[in-house]
Image (cartoon, rainbow, N blue to C red):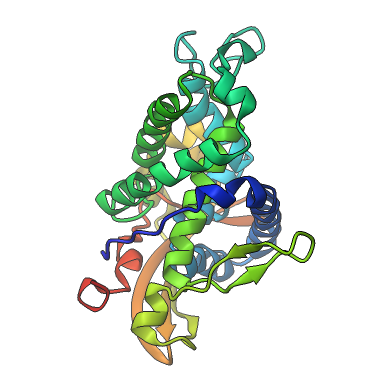
Length: 312
């Protein structure tokens, strides 16, 4: 996988932070709506999952199409299992615990003067510092299939790096989401490139023109499309269910009995009219909606579409 390095402009962070977070929230809303709509078709939900990964290397948001999002808001799942264990690490927190009576690092008593007075520059420095580490663990895992390892390592490292910069242990879920989603967005930009944009209200430049790895390898006018080459139903549904991790499903508040059908959908990735990759996506039907079964769906090859030799 190509090594990707792209610096986050900390001096501009205070100005663009508002617009970045607003854009991320808009994206989350759009993706959530689309995932619910796509869920009525096994092929559409499979393509949506693959599309998120290929278009911008965004396996993080791809999970909004998976079983994780069946009974949880995706963000709530991340808070409960990966953020709160860090924020409430001194309180003996376990997923599912009520945090109302716990004093975690999100309590204002942990704020240093640097935290109270930061105009966004130090927060931007933390995000900038975290980006190479984000890329490193993404490369180590060859994508987002092992989200448990990525979330666990990333948030532990984030707490350490933020303490170095701010000199305190203050940490909130908002800080954690902002850092991670900024890194996810920067990684996506490194693939697709960016256009120069000027904020119409402030007149300030919010992003520079840059060529992404896809543009360098496939041309600035590259086009990615998706085709379904096969859909196969799992006739032995009980056998398929035995391949799943029931304990992991339980963390999603889903049981094996909830699954009423399962299929394997083969999605071909077409770049500039030629097949570049193919991936088999397992999908399961719960109620009337289809979800990606992420335990046995392996997407590592989708993060290697851009070859090292062409981008070094």
